[in-house]
Length: 105
Ligand SMILES: [Zn+2]
Image 1 (tube, rainbow, N blue to C red):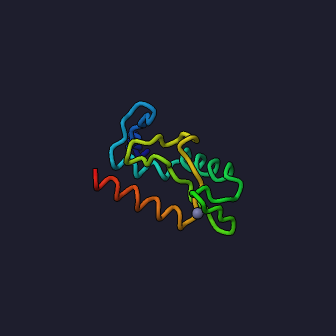
Image 2: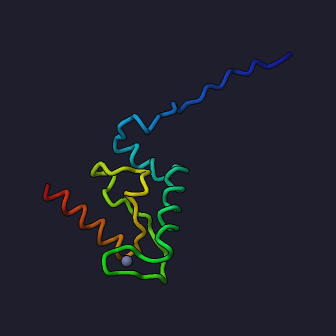
């Protein structure tokens, strides 16, 4: 006797992020996408191994691809023009400053 195999339907709908306005959950999910990884690599590659933070220029560290206009502030997620490579110190400073600016409205 043959077992009936139920049809498996994909559980996740495909969301077109080019047209959909990302909510908080989607914004968080964005960081795991291959598109983001590629953007991040391109931003860091373009920096040529130097921190792009103002007056920093560190070369001996690992870099973070930073959104100049943060996603929370409506910045473009995958636009290279909205990316810069920052060392951990500059990235932390910038993230804190952006958060403070948001809180001040
Ligand atoms: Zn730096």
